[in-house]
Image 1: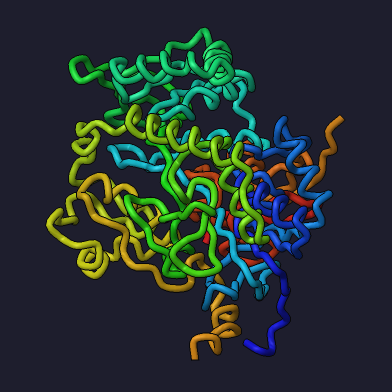
Image 2 (image 1 turned 90 degrees about the horizontal axis):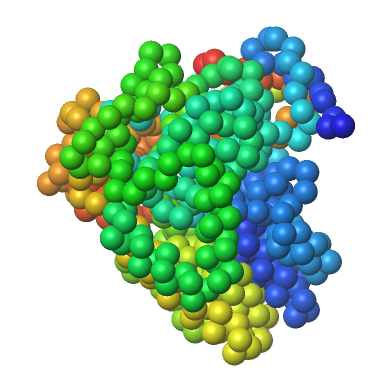
Length: 421
Length: 72
């Protein structure tokens, strides 16, 4: 590994979403040499994804990132971290090695997919996934779309799709009205947030938003053609060209786990200054618990300041506290109903990479046993899709993590293998 | 107003908007089965780009003359 060229920085940030951007800005503006590694072609993560021009407030933050002097390396996929001061990333087909004094993890979140009959049909994709695809230039005009699953994300995505000319037939939230109503009522205390939510709802006003409704199955020949929905009593079908279905977000914990950072209840254990249990490693954004952009900006800034040896100003700490409370309310409001565990049939694929069906899995197994018996989780997604599903279906915790945490060419593993002796 | 460029999808020349992702280009051309996560996690969007296999279409931007192969 000594032969590989290395980028050296005071502070390395992994992830270019709001948290990573805020962290990089804070550390760079405090005078540190900052390197930000991001997988996507442009920084912004998911919520600030753009092609031609970022939306506000992204525009200001991204301009601030450029002005801060932080070095941004896009299309860099971190696949190993042999120690808390060293990162190995795949970049332009080869290896980029980074050496740093402080490391800030801001690897964000992914969607939780739950298996149901027909979920592997073409044109069944995620909710955030549909938004990402739309923002990346996909044409949804004229497509009949059902948006389903759970979480506040259903609203802006339905609005975006409708705005792009899709016919949104239905938005189906599995959480019951009895839980959603108090959540929305409490939003009245944050007029800005309430206005935001109402704005989204007006974006797809001609489409119904149903609560306590979920997808039972999808059917079609070459692609999805209709969806079977239920409210627990009545079951009906809705014709569609596209089904967007995902059940909330889960943090991308793999790199944090690889480094040995303590994780509790599916989130990285963070201290007052966003420090993890590993010295010199900080965590920001969704890693600390799904909480959205305002919380990500607060935790990212606090982490960046801390990595630069600065204390967080009290208003920022208060912003974080507010964000944490909102995150707790989100988790409670949109918690998943048990009926979703009964959706898959024996033939329903659970591990899409390795074609492992629900019927092949023994709920009494550990994740390790399941992997050894069926290859569940051994495909290219490395259990990111089926792992979150099995955690919900069977209560299986995530298995231990080993490098590479992202697939990469063997040549890159060989080039970095000396680090492991 | 938006710049348009040419890429090749499975040997066929297709005109696409500059700056879109390969996933979006495939979706608009009606080719392939479409992504699942569309954000670089699930690896279902893998295609061969300019001869390099296992490239994620969703995290790759189109470029003039890009050779995209969806099979294999």
